Length: 57
Image (cartoon, rainbow, N blue to C red; front, side, top):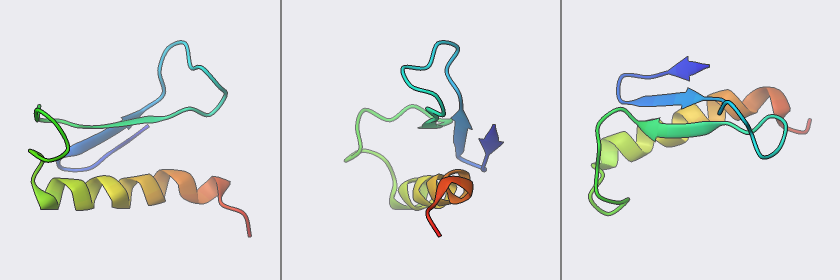
């Protein structure tokens, strides 16, 4: 669906609800506290980019 240098967004094969999108880092980290700040920032930016078409206006 979308990809950044360190993050990937995709729709699962069997989504729980229509439109569900998962965003994951392309490198494994133990948890959010182990994830570098720049990867977290890129994740949030990709969330905004993917969610923008669904945003209320």
